[in-house]
Image (cartoon, rainbow, N blue to C red; front, side):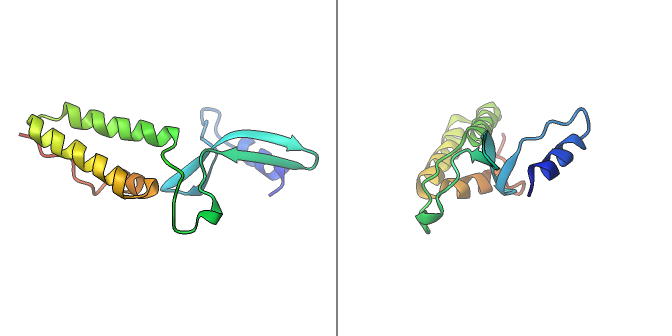
Length: 121
């Protein structure tokens, strides 16, 4: 894509629209951090994109907007009307999931609207 095409698209956005520029899958977007013009090429740097040479192993970790989403989920757990043991079990499940699964798997699970909320009393 030429910069002129991208510029036209950006200029066509509604005046009150300010979307993040991302790459990757819709369920795991990588946000644009910086852009650098070098001659005839515009280089774009995205947050913690996994290296293609990693194969099946994923080493990207969680990026800033994913950490915010995880924090929000933890706040939801803390604010739930349930006993301490139930909350501890839910947080333990999140911790173990973060330890045993890849970060993209964790985010995919946490963003799934079908994931049930913790039980309330």
